[in-house]
Length: 537
Image (cartoon, rainbow, N blue to C red; front, side, top):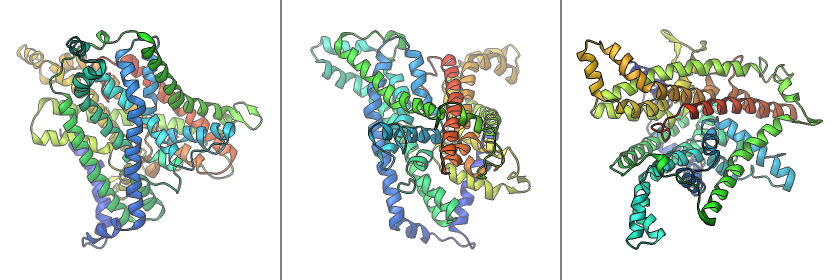
């Protein structure tokens, strides 16, 4: 646990605490009165209210749209099911900036709906809500569908034999078993939408602001650290509460259930009703997931003189606006290098943490397990800005070093590594290690000969997830990426922030490239996944 604890202490706790300290103790004396002053401001109350409201609305809408999909993927067997499962998971690993860009191309000014029907949704909150559904659809399908596919259908059939109707059997047998999984999925969706940044930045503009977006505005634009510190504390407390409730629902989900192999529960649809349900789910996937991505690709080729590669060619040269110090195309190489380094760090730190959590028990270790999840909910903007004000003097003067970006990205990748590897490591029979030790193997050799072959595939899956989420990290990277070394999400945001048809087209082209890289990574993961890890995030 030494390396993971040191890593989180230096690169997570220290920057966050420093931001709070500078905001609430500017002259050496604590100013706790600023908390009440800030939280009583009408503009901040509006931000807090909108943050909670849009998170609740996004969560409810996502459950409404995705639960039928969870059932279809769990209980039906149809051609192309594996590929479609990978497709619906693609949005989850896409950068939020790209998600916002895709919906801007669909429902924004000059978008598909604007051209066809004169309908723009980017001027209201609906674009944000639909983008959140797009982003979180896979959370519900994977979390709820993963458990649903393993529930023994014979329990529900037994209730029907005893006289229960189909609805009564489902409500009294299946639904209680699914409630913890549905609650866990709802909490995760609420967490991701509560801390939404990239989507709100692109689609909300100045009209709508979540806590995360407001923290960015207060730090980067207004340099108001006291307000940013208070909002960081509010978000920290809220995220801690959400993660605490999530851990409780996960423990409930792990209670004894009669589970079977997923392939034993899936069958071809029967009857007109089931075929209609399958068709409805496929239509919703096409409209909510495939259409925004398709429009994004189409806009990257559609120029004023027809379709072509004009925007892609423009990525290789500098324009006269001074938006970039280097050609935007260099952002691809920067992102790949940063993501590889971040993946190596995340696998090392997360792998050690997962091993420690497997072999130890107690409150301290359980507390550390919860700490590992905090980077998913605590403001990445705060972490990025904290890097600038803490890692700026010896012995850790890293502001001019390229490693700063991978370190921030690895913070987001570590939780995925831990959550992917932990179930597999816990499933390794301890007697195998003991037998190796009896035969004279050292702990290192026992791990190499016993654990590694069993967890190798889970390790590759974990590395793939870490690579994908590192590639798309935006909240912290936007602060610490150097002007001459932008990442793909940062470059897309810069292009969208400038007027002009060429900048917009280049943003679509860069977003398409980023989407392809993320999709390829995920398709490789789908090939590597096992039944044990397929339902885990």
